[in-house]
Amino acid sequence: MKRKIKDYYRYVLYKFFRFIFIITPHSILKPILIFSAKLVNKYNKRFNKVVEANLYLAFGNTLSQKRKEEIKFNSYKSLFFNMYEFIENQKISKEDLFKKANFENEHYIIDAIKNNRKIIFITAHYGGWEIALPYVALKFGTLAVVNRKMDNPLINKLYIEARDRNNIIMLEKKVAAKGMLKALKNNNHVAVVIDQHIKDGVEVEFFDKKVLATDATSRLSLKLDAIIIPIFSVMNDFRNYTLKVYEPLDPRNIEFKTEDKIKEFTKMQSDIIEIQIKETPDFWFWQHKRWKKFYKEIYK
Image (tube, rainbow, N blue to C red; front, side, top):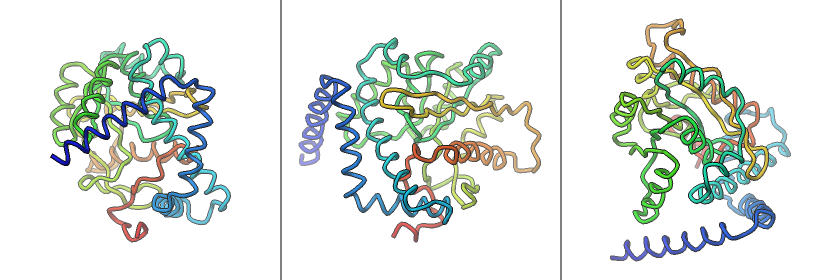
């Protein structure tokens, strides 16, 4: 009973803030979000320690303290902008959503569709991840996205309805493999965010440090001859993004150097995420304990 009351309270609170977000002019909302990011950046000691540990593990002593602080703040700002995207994209039209982003190397997606290839999109919690997948789904067809079910069933229902409105099918993590397989066989596209800590997976190196990475995308790609297309939403400004598409990983063209194709293929995908983060580290979600499996002592 207490859980239900708590869920309903959070649901009402969420609806209230969503209403405020929607009616507030962008010119006012933007500085409010930036100010909120500054407050969290200054006072959230718990996550700040995670960010600092991750930056040191990834870059060692190559970054100045000033640059680390800049990355940390921009990461929080990106997070707050994403919160807004998540809310606004539940209500706005497809045309208005398209106005918020432009494509770089869109031809990779168009060519894959023209050639009737099954597509697996991979991405990360980077920049405007809450706009990247709805944009792709509305422009290029139904997208099955692997996602964790929210703890609050009332908010989760709103989340599913919003995703459905944006042409997205939600796949539970627990049954993701079967869901992705079914989606691809039904000629729908699949999208997976592959930059988080997971309990089980293939051991690869990320920033020259060991992590576990999902091998589901590699297995499906090799099994179904599906092309893997990396895509990242680079934040230019508030409600202004560039959807950056990397050259696809096509199992037909890859010359594997080892017997373990799954691990090698998975490492290729992880490397692309690393390349994008190194290019502009400010927009990655550094608050996540990506290296927890093998370096959990750094988060104590």
